[in-house]
Length: 325
Ligand SMILES: Cc1cc2nc3c(=O)[nH]c(=O)nc-3n(C[C@H](O)[C@H](O)[C@H](O)COP(=O)(O)O)c2cc1C
View 1 (cartoon, rainbow, N blue to C red):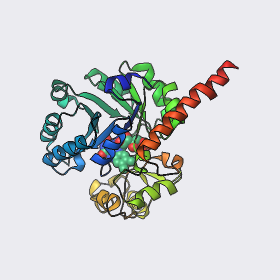
View 2 (cartoon, helix red, strand yellow):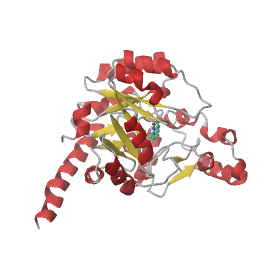
View 3 (cartoon, rainbow, N blue to C red):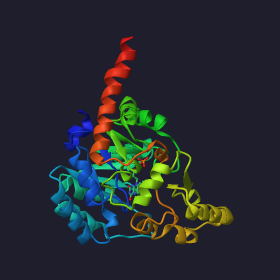
View 4 (cartoon, rainbow, N blue to C red):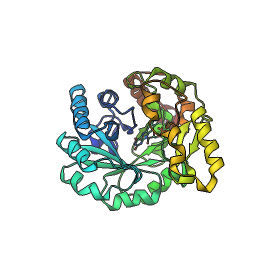
């Protein structure tokens, strides 16, 4: 399939794997790129810029296809050495960066000087327009359904994507709730040039996470995510578990006086316990409502090939048949 995104990124299929903390290692990124999509390594999962440089080299050893790096700007209390992470990305020869968390204006000159395509992930039309204005090459438009941080506007993709299409000149991909060929065709119909998936890629053979995580996603329905940290204006969609239930109790008890420090036990250091140890009650970890559409654990190539053949059959058989009639 050819879209503005496949052309821009030099990939075969318009499918991107979004950055995911403790999931976006070289194994998954390389598998997605080898299957014709764009795999993405998550920079801040690597504890130091030196280790990110090694992870980029490791990924290059596993694929000769393009892959990207996600650079997430965290809230102000955490201060990773961003300039050094950016140097590792540039010196590693990476040609696509997915930015997220806040607008990447301050780092754009360095990324653009290195010939890097910047895809900014954001959750509203106004942030998408800002990304366009500061020179981003594309936007990943993350609807309210998404796993991770859906922002504070709560606009689902059926409205957000066509609104983005009305306003943006740069191409965008649909993110949040994407799982299969139906998602891809719907996203294209709503004006996107491809899809970005997070949760769906965790339930694949190559995702380097504990089997318990994959089983939990397959077992979950669309009713099993919760929104936490709304009171902090840092809303996160997570899979429900006893740690998340405790977060919600604390949020209820503290009301307007809630501070991030009140939730430290349920949110700090949780990712390695979930993703590596498989402790599914450890606390809050991001997961999309799309879990309700995930029923198996295929290889990444099986998943991507299936999405593309479903999309082809939807467009050329179901929709063409309806239209011809
Ligand atoms: C476990 C997990 C961890 C994530 N970590 C990050 C992250 O570190 N940085 C980021 O920009 N997005 C992160 N995301 C968001 C994804 O990149 C993607 O935007 C989102 O999952 C799309 O929604 P979906 O899960 O419905 O596909 C994460 C998502 C999940 C499920």
